[in-house]
Length: 607
Image 1 (cartoon, rainbow, N blue to C red):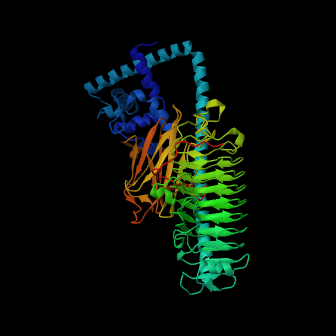
Image 2: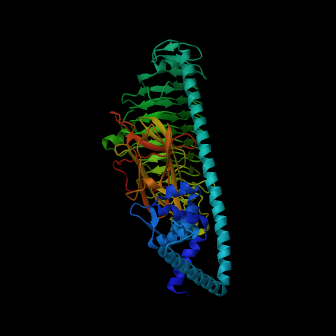
Image 3: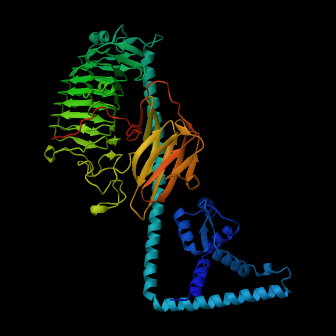
C-alpha cells in the first residue's frame, strides 16, 4: 500500500492521462455543468461519459442542482495542467521571468517531478505486486467493451423500433383514412338525403325503421343505418350485414325492454352502433345477444347501460367479438350484483379480441360450460374473469388494469392456458422483476419472480404492449410506452394534466422509459418528477407539431414517475369514461382510468 500522498498523486496523474478527462476538467474550470451539456460537448454515448465522470470522482463534486463541478483536488489538477501545457502563460515576459514567477515555476516543476517520481515508483510496485490483477483488469476491460458494443446495438435496435412505430402509425392513419372513405362511399349511395335514413345498399330501397329493413332484406344484404337515435328492439334472423354510419352517432336504444339486438342467424355482421338500455330485470335483457349463431362478427360498437349483460353468447360458435367498448351494465349504476360485460354459455371456438371492458356489476368476462375460446388482447379495467366449468380456453396478451381481486383460481384440470409462447398477460399490479431468476431469460419483457401471478399467469408482461392509446369520449390518442422496467399503476389524470406510473427493476441495473404523447392530448411546458424530485433537466424531450417524446433513465429500484404538462384535452360536460388502452399495432389495449366496484363478490372459485 502507498502513502496517502502517493495515492493522491496516482489518482491525479491517472486521471490526467486520458484526453477526454483532461477536457472535462478544462470545461468545468469555467464553472459547473450539467450532464446533458457535457454529453453535447463530447457527442458520445451517455454510458461512456458516465464512465469518465466516475473515473474523475475524486476530482469532481456534485452541486445542489445536480451539476458537476471541480473539487479542491480538481482545481489543483487543472492548475497543474495549465502550467504544464502553457508554461509561458505564467509570465508576461517569458524570456526574462520575474523572480517571483521563477520561484513559482521552480516550485511547480519540483512538485511535478516529485509527483512523477512518486507515481512511477508506485506504479512499478503495483505492477510487480499485482501482475495477475492487471491481467484480470484487462479481461474485465474487454468484457466492458463487449457490453458497451452490445449497448450500442441495443440502442440501434431501439431507434429502429421507433422508426418502425412511426411507419406503423402512418399505415394506421392510412387504414383509418381508408375506413373513412368506405363510410363515405356507403353514405354517397344514399344521395343527398338526411343522415337518419335507413337504406338497403343492394336495392336502394329506404325504410322507416331498422327492423322493417331487416324484414325486407334477402340473405347477404347490406343495410346501412344513418346517424340518429332509434328506439327499437332489433331481431336479425338472416345472414346479412347491419352497418351503422358512426358508432358514436348511430344509436339503438331498447327503451328498457328486452334485448336491444338479438342475432339468431349464422354469418351476421354488426358494425358501427351504440347499443344501450336493454331490460334490467333479473335474467332479463342484454345489449347484444347471439343465440344459436355461427361465424357471426360483432365489431366496433359501443355497448353501454344494459341489464343482464352487455354481450351474451348462447350456444354460439366461431364468432368474433372485436374492438368493442363494453361498459356500464345498469346493475353497476344502481347497486345490483348482477350484470356481466361479456357472458358465454355453452359457446365454443369463439374469438374475443381487442375489446375494452369496464364498469360491469359482476364479471368482465363470465364463461360457463364454454370451451376452446380465444381471449386475446382485451383490456379489462377493474374487472375479473370467471371460468366455471370451461376448458381449453386461451387468455393471451390481455391487460388487467386496476384488477380488483380476489385471486383467480383456475383448475389445472381445465387445461385453460394463460400464456402463448412464453408470453402471458399484463397486470398493472404486478410487482415482480424481469431479472432472469429461476433460470429464465433476463430482459425479455416477461416477469421472472412472484409467479404464477394471481395464481394463473406464469409469464406476466412487465409493461403494456405498445402502442398505447388513451381513449377520451370515444376518441383515441395513440401513445407509445417502451421500457425495460416493470410498469405498474399506469394512470392518466386529466384534471392534474399528468400521466403517472411506477417503475421497478433489478438492483445494480439501469432502467429507462421512452414515452411518446400526442400533442392533442397533453402538451405545453413539461415537468418530469422522479419520486417527487424534479428531474426535467436530466430527461431528453423532443417535440414536433404532433407529439412529444420523453426519455429518462435511472438506477433501478422502486420509483414513482409523474409526467406533467400544461395543456390537456378539455373535459366535456357529459358523462365521460376515461380509459388508457393499448392495441397490438393500432387497437386499444390498456386503460388508465380506475373505478370503484359495486358489491363485488368476495371470492371467485372456478373449476
